[in-house]
Length: 416
Image (cartoon, rainbow, N blue to C red; front, side):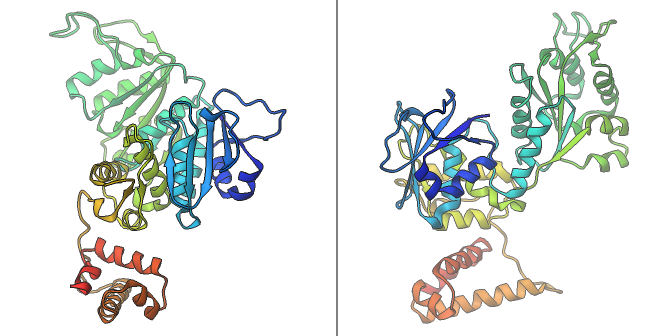
């Protein structure tokens, strides 16, 4: 476990940040002179303090938002205001976490990652269920890296991507001449993952007849290559992922019940991004850092741009968020990603009231109409509009972004 050494000033001024890093799995170490940091540990100091190890020090400030990664032995720098704390803490995670470590800020996601850390300490089979693009493979890799098998191979196999006729040979291997075209033997993924972890992604797509052979490999910890007669022992931890409800697949006769129970020794579940919006600022910061290249300063999301991300329904989950931010990094001019740089893969469809409309939709449309009329009466002034409506400017921006997400650009119409 990596440790962080915060200065006394950081503990006074940024205790919420320190607590968040502790929730991510960091050990918060004492900053006294007798403490001996390990090579991978980090120091947190406040602006104006002198870094003892610049290459492993994050300098925290307040005020104008900026995020500068570690570079050429220089310390990383991060500053933000209290109103920007969600994104600021997200950049703190991006700057301190090792590459590939899952990023989270939503309480349920943090609980899931803490549970995965505990699961990693054992050698049991794990089943991760969740929608496509929600980070199942990232979680599986984190389990591998937190286990005693971390120095062994981690091999990920997408069961839906391989032709059905080749899947058996790719999983269990084959001997020379076992089938037409087998001019040499093949090791197979099970034997290649010996001493490590084998991830079977989209396990629901595996043909029924092959499921029986997989079940035997899990039970006996051995495989028989195609064309072979003798089983070979394998030492492999299996993690399976599915984007469909495997219990429903069992009930429908498309998945073996015995295999399901063999895989689901410890089930974990990832949620759609729209159901854990608290993760969006942290994920956005991590993705910006991943795709910002060699920039000395990481682009910061404006309040309006972040609100747009928070309001989107994210049918493509984290993969869609990554696409949106990669486009934004290309479109942004300077060090700030503005609302106009955010282009979604699929704009949200306007929610029309039809038939038995819900009360919430009626209230929302009435609210939009009140904002529209007040903006027009105030000549498009958002400050005056917020005063007349008795709400803050930030709340008004939130409402305008929500209307725009649903296809109703109130601000543009009111100013036309």
